[in-house]
Amino acid sequence: MIKAQILHILERDGVGCYKFQISGTDAVIYMLALGDNSHLREGLNVRLNFKSSDVIIATSKLQNCSIRNELPCKILKISKGEILSVIHLKFAQFEFESIISSLSCNELNLNEGDSVFAYIKSTCVHISGIDD
Image 1 (cartoon, rainbow, N blue to C red):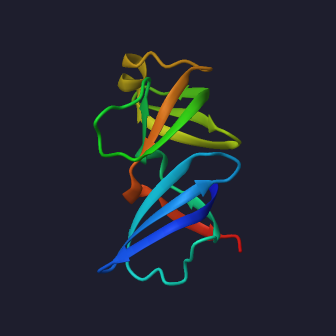
Image 2 (image 1 turned 45 degrees about the horizontal axis):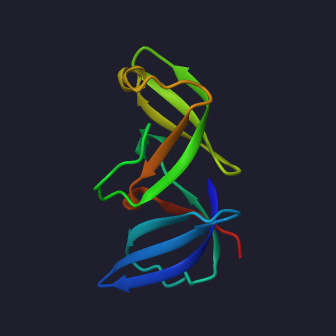
């Protein structure tokens, strides 16, 4: 869960694009959502969430891609299984996980303490709570 504030809302034809400022940081995160979200307004404090399986890990910045949400993170812990690995990440004061294949974990040579980039598609981000 990431605490954030809604900075900007653009809605057209039942589709909304939301820009959030992540609390305590200069970082922004975007969310694309369908449906009526008329209860949301700029300046509202919210809690954002996403599935661990929707977090992409890269050891360097991605170039020329459509993913807008990039968070520079530290790897706190790796729980490696035969098939899946859970990568425990920290961005600013927020902690979350990425679930990737153990094959990818090995090929990326990921280790605890490494700096990596976490990418989350804007269609995977959702509001899990409102703090105002």
